[in-house]
Image 1 (cartoon, protein in one colour):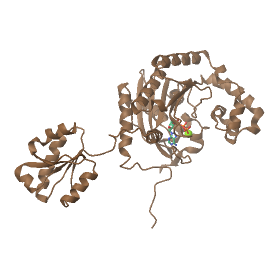
Image 2 (tube, rainbow, N blue to C red):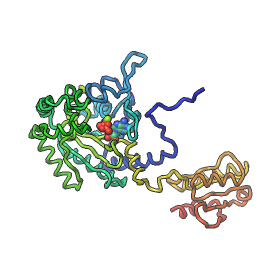
Image 3 (cartoon, rainbow, N blue to C red):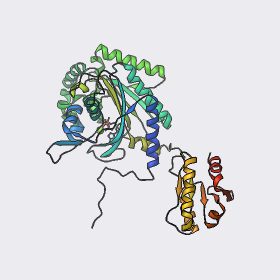
Image 4 (cartoon, rainbow, N blue to C red):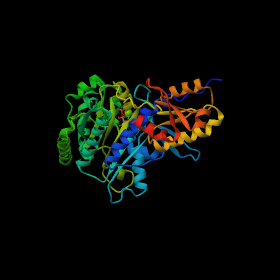
Length: 425
Ligand code: ATP
Ligand code: MG
């Protein structure tokens, strides 16, 4: 019988890759908690309606990328394609937004039926951040300052650049949209197919078309900037000066729009030039209208999501993963003969109590001295603790360095932990 394979575009993350994932997740988690962000965990499945109402009916995601199915009750459910909608739903449902500000983050898998390619998958992982109840550009700036700190921590500061834009209020976008459609209607035949379709459904998205001819046509198009309302202009101006004061470099990209309907005012993307076409590692913006649109009290909000696969791909491409991120053990405790097993466990337990954050592996499964030492070596451990019947009888162990030419030596079991602590430091 043919073996069953994983679904195309949905990846297993194997034990060898986990240390890198944990390194990235831990780094992000540390930075977020330094800024007082709290974690929220939402279900992976929501009512389909939630995404239709938030992301927008005529977006790529809702039109053609969602995993939607009827459950056994006949309800239409969808595997979440992004986290913002669910986060808003949860925060609203549990009264987290009532008369208070919130800084939240979450992580987990997202699902989109896209064409799988490097940096683009059908199940992928995001870390998302959502801030509620803060209207000013200060929180927008904080999000960007925070991400800049994260790039610093990951060694990516030189490899990412920030593009920002303001897409104004819904009214501003409406007048701009009419002007844009009017201008583009003279060029309908020359537009790429996606853009033709979007002319009716979502004309703003034409601005970030990758098609060369479409971009050429757009050169003379009306500029969103000219339609911005005063409040959005001022908001954007203050954001810019806050970023400048904080030393966060950026460029204004007047063509930057986001693919989801709920954004307004600030939008931004962190882009890398080292991953080809899938260069956006983090993207977000302000979505002041969404909470109300989903039935909540008007609550302003701003957030972003970063793609973990792309981030990890970038770190690997640039060889920026610290050597210490390797999943190696520190100590491997052998046990030669059945009568030594109980003592071996007690030695290993005492090491785990004394050596915080160190990996101590107990050999299980018996075998010859040679085969146990082979496993010790393979574990990446720096030291093997050698324990046979003689050692048990004399209350000592053999301590064998595995990564240097130093000699093996005998050490009393009671001293072992403190000796190893010093040697591993
Ligand atoms: P893109 O323009 O690359 O399709 P997007 O605008 O659809 O991105 P968002 O919905 O804003 O992306 O998601 C935020 C981030 O999540 C992206 O910048 C990217 O890093 C990551 N991401 C989005 N879709 C995928 C995917 N299919 N596979 C892997 N990562 C993804
Ligand atoms: Mg996309």
